[in-house]
Image (tube, rainbow, N blue to C red):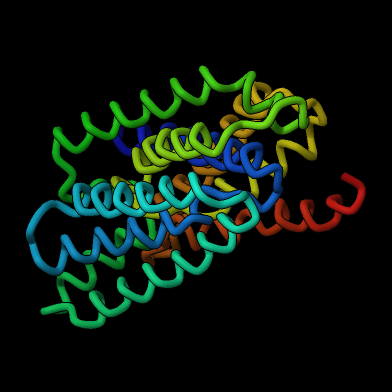
Length: 265
């Protein structure tokens, strides 16, 4: 229970903070931590690890996400932001296709169920070791530390006062990967809060200082995840409710706010 709540807190901070960094880095409200294929890579690594048994699901997810990020790192050195977004979408589709092939060829139903329960996102931490948790916390600390350290530069870049060089953008992507993977490798991909919550934060607060959005997005992300977690645990009508699917239902009114208010923003 305590560890589950720890990862509710960690995920509620890591994913929105990573998402708002991507939006500021790209100067685009569609910026998302999964845009470059990180979510698909995490699923591919988890699937490969689960089906083959070559390492733990958490380690497999991290390794594959790291490889994906390194590829994006070198691509970032060569292309502009618009091209990077296009590359990310295509690359994510490619990685997702590989994951589908791996999962389709699962050796047995138990492994398939284990993978899908992780992929649906949950905070049960089944099979997660103390080493996995320690590694995850280190990744979180590194990612959040870089986010705070680069906050002023990201704000100035977003406002058009400076231009962050491609090499620096590439290093920031690695830091964002550390932040996001700290949650995803343990709990599985969690949608909405890395894209919807940062956009809601920018609707609520017009200040462009990214540090304010770190605070607002984190508070909203933790709150939304906590409500979702409590619903899944105690108002589940006797069925298994995946975190991501349940959150999408709960967040529907919030998504409506984005579309209704975005023309004015």
